[in-house]
Image 1 (spheres, rainbow, N blue to C red):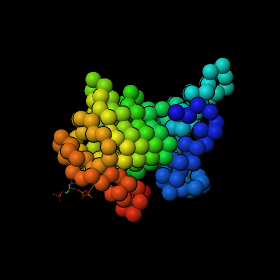
Image 2: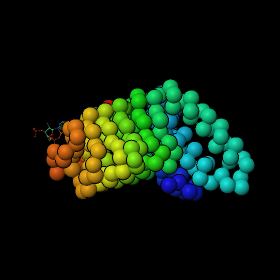
Image 3: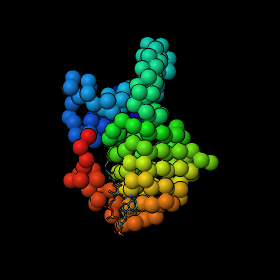
Amino acid sequence: MIEDRRTYRVYRRKDLAAHGLTRVGLYNYMWMDCVRFQLRLRRIEYLYNTKKNNPLKALAWFVEEVVQHWESVRLGFTIPKNVFGAGLCIVHRGTIVVSNKARVGDNCRIHPGTSIGDYDGAPEIGDNVYIGPGAKIFGPIKIGNNTAIGANAVVNRSFEGNGTLAGIPAQRVSKLGALEQGVFGERRENL
Ligand SMILES: CC(C)(COP(=O)(O)OP(=O)(O)OC[C@H]1O[C@@H](n2cnc3c(N)ncnc32)[C@H](O)[C@@H]1OP(=O)(O)O)[C@@H](O)C(=O)NCCC(=O)NCCS
């Protein structure tokens, strides 16, 4: 969670790196909607978590929240603050719905059509997790580090340890995790 300026910078840098960027140029800011959304999400997390006894920060947070609400409606995102760890990559605009009770670790790559939902409890997802297009993950479940969740999977029970999950309901279809599947690297899709 972002609780100071130093952590804020780390999150920002890791998010940009997850998009294959080292800095935010005007081009990226203008045309890369998901990058712009994520940069604002991190600003909101920083301002919200550090605004106590600071009316200026509180005002800045409120303004950013209003702008983020419009932008979320435009892009189809329901993505709350303080859920995702550093190194998040929202690959495309399109419907993504995430419960504010869910927790997701570092280096998550998430596609559209996905939902991480509260259903008598919300998922806790580890680091280095790939969430393919259309995947639905819900309930009080735990997903281990280095997991690839395949396109259109419905994940309704816990899977500890790494691997690839696919199908409805999801099963472990391979022992190879997201890192071995190359979904963050050589198989990386175009943004
Ligand atoms: C995570 C993912 C990359 C793993 O795919 P993979 O490399 O085929 O995985 P594996 O080879 O380890 O698959 C093992 C088995 O599960 C099956 N499988 C893989 N993904 C599946 C899925 N999403 N649903 C059902 N079965 C699946 C494979 O066909 C294979 O079956 P087989 O042993 O009978 O041949 C893939 O599921 C996925 O989500 N890809 C999405 C890519 C995409 O849509 N990119 C564009 C985004 S815009």
